[in-house]
Image (tube, rainbow, N blue to C red; front, side, top):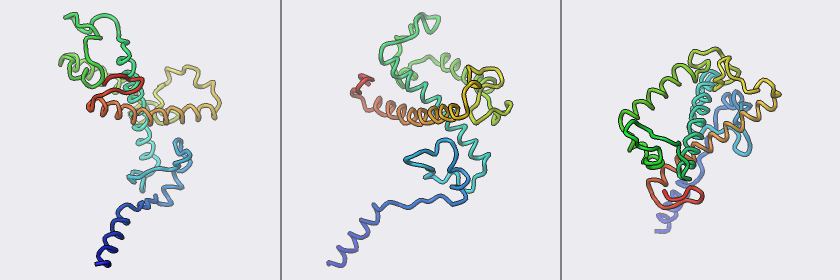
Length: 202
């Protein structure tokens, strides 16, 4: 009986022991100096997406990460701002429905008429195909993945030192990572209901 209990306890302990997931040394040496590899976590690839990856694969994943981060930052702030009662003035359609007549968050997306969803989808498609392009999508190569200036917009970027550019890109990357978790949390809490500090009633 004691042997059975000891065996069960050993199996139980093993089930909750941390799994050692080490990236291959070649992957670590290739990407450990990339932007976003920062203390305290360092190089973090728990799904092994960069195992045996080359620089093009890394740049594509970084482009997608930056893009999702930017969208999440807009979504998170949009959620906070509309829940604070700030809405665009005027009507959203020809029937005279005002912007503040729709619910906040995900619930608002389900209330928008189908024609409105088509317009939003068409606008996003236009931005994707013709405006927000970088070298990965056929535009002239930028300085880094996610560089959407396309030789037109600058806003003083070229006046920054290389260290300042690197720092600003790292800040954007980390803010995007936080926003992805933040908007996911808001969406989950919206389904759960209740109230959150600063955000208010869900």
